[in-house]
Image (cartoon, rainbow, N blue to C red; front, side, top):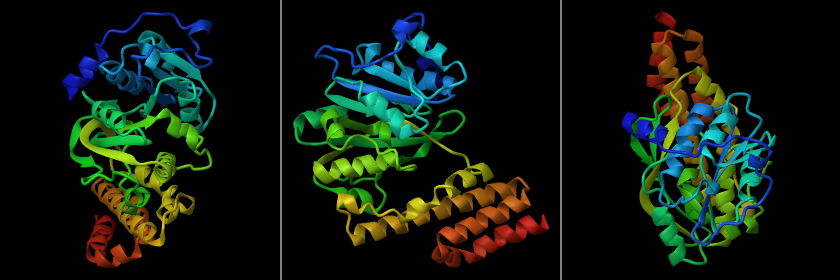
Length: 331
């Protein structure tokens, strides 16, 4: 993996100066060969942003830096310098919302297809190529998606886990997409730009899983296509108290029931069960990591959160939770 990162950092880029002419203010006319635009929202992650953008520029789908739009939400680091070195389009935009920032990016795209990449993730070779072929073969489809490879938070080293697991939902399948939280990682999704227009893009009122909300609204209107192709490295937060605090603020997503997308009670219940299980596992991992670090109070906090988010699982694994708590108290 280090070799891949090094290769990305060595990828040649245009040496241009960032002046008033470099700040993107609207749509740019592109020739017909440039069919994909990639939007990368960012905030104070210059080093990670460079890896992300270089991974996109290395793709044969990207014939010009104009196909990459970086939306900078008032970064205070050297993000603007990195964008200048890479020669991609730069949009300073104080949206203070990842949904607004992504909307600001795709609305400047004039290509037939649009994709999004988080600034701390990276494309693998071949990403979106199968999705592009799938959309060309299914002219009514709103988006095509693949799979992501989980990766280490610090070094982007691949882990032995990919998602979503096959079989991937295809056709008119909003319920199947939602039922077991089988949403793909956004970097593996290629949208038909018109499908974004149809639903007015991301909803800024959704503060977590705004990407899943968008995909669900598109899937309620159009067919979707899943392709079993792993194309994105997705950083996974390491277990710790800080991770537990982050997901604790987002715990209400476990009760998400998007009725306006036509989701019935059965897939809604399946989603809630699987999401509560995911949150329980995260908090349990955080408690274990805190115990190993000797942080007694943090162990109690994380264990209590695991029990709160899924009481049934807490009962099922009560001996294990009790062991972790006892160990932290007596250590």
